[in-house]
Image 1 (cartoon, one colour):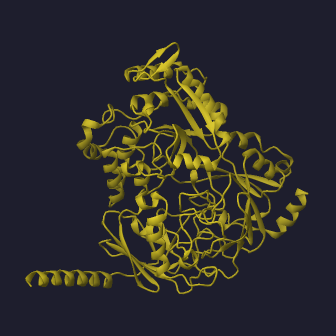
Image 2 (image 1 turned 90 degrees about the vertical axis):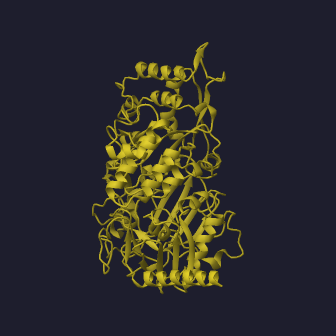
Image 3 (image 1 turned 120 degrees about the horizontal axis):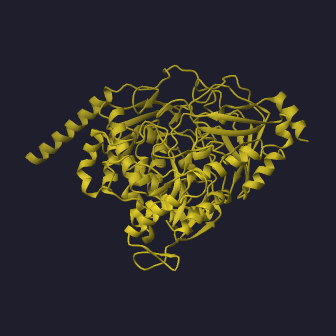
Length: 623
């Protein structure tokens, strides 16, 4: 009896504490990870849009590859993802605009001009208690799916549970700190958290897509979706041919058209995507006027391929935008699950063979900078020697740390750009010999007696022009290296299954990184099919630093933990760092208007519109 009384008292105390916590919480119009949202509760629109932008017109865009599904949240199939992604994806994986999704929308929507901030969209308000043990969202009564069915709290909860149980494994990793989701009413949903240390959780769950439960009932969510989906966004899919084209049409009854998060955005009546298997063909389609706008991420093309008549007479505009975003890291990722890449000295030698200076000068027209950090273009990048605060974090792992990490700045070799990188190759050979490798009959032999052979897997033929000179340097060391280029669908399958040796990988940057780091570099992700831990990184020290980054309560603590993590990743030699730029290259037929307001993201196509007078004149010039 005393035990039952004690249990009842504990339950009563818990319920009372929650009630007091909830009563003390004030509903907010937005959420930011550190600080307060920049815009007031009564803001009318994002400051970088034209609220009077005209609606109308048709836009023709191009994508490379194919698709056989409209469900981008599962492993199976090759998805058409523009329902949740920007119309134009920029180099490095960043998007052209952070406004609401086109078909699938979320409770919060980010601002293109702020850091780690979400404003209420499907949600009318957000509530976060001081102890950060939960977050609640109150949905807007006007929020509806495109078939007129209201968006409810049950849709939110069903989406979360479905994505956790049947979605991509990376979603489970990022949402590992969510304890449960509770429907507290038709328009109120609460997420309970396992920890108070993950400051980004309200933004993560608020950014999840909200899918219509009634549409997916009776369907196998794990199978590719071949029907046009129902969403709550400004566009509906009105026509498509799997693998070849898809047409998005603006919903004239979109419920959020006059909300602060929707006003001045999504101005095109029709957006049609044509899929091409080859970049060259896509470029020719643009030159012929079959495609209206393109983002150019090949520096050689930007320097030499835009000399056709339409550019010369002004019918096509070339513009360069500068962004202030983190650039993350791009590089050749070595699959450490393969024995050939098990030794970090071997990975360092392979890195030493890459001649960035020659590549940048001869292939990129000196357009890029060398990446020297996993958090490049941010204050989180490690520089110089570790600070006392970093040393304190790394001290428990000092016996397992690479030689030099605590006592030397991280550096990469710098050549004279002549193509004669003999000194760097000699250093690479010394590293290989230290690992027990040797050259026999001009062939490199591993310590286990096996030939040193591997394949670089690519999904884009344009990347071969960079890979092949690199392969020549590796062959000078005695490596037997091949390059294999496959179509995007096959590439996705191979990388999801970690069935490759080396591949080009991009980890997008973040000003305030959070639980996505678990999916990038944690031991758990390295063992999860479909995760983004492509190199197979597994280190207790890295796992610990990831958690310290996620839990950092302020910018100083975050900066210290991120720099310590950066050093561990760099000195692990998991990737051959490539290059980055702060410039965005956009070419378009002169038929658009745009707000003309500089933003942190540099470029935001979701705020553009078709200028009818320009369009008439420009369309005549294409004939």
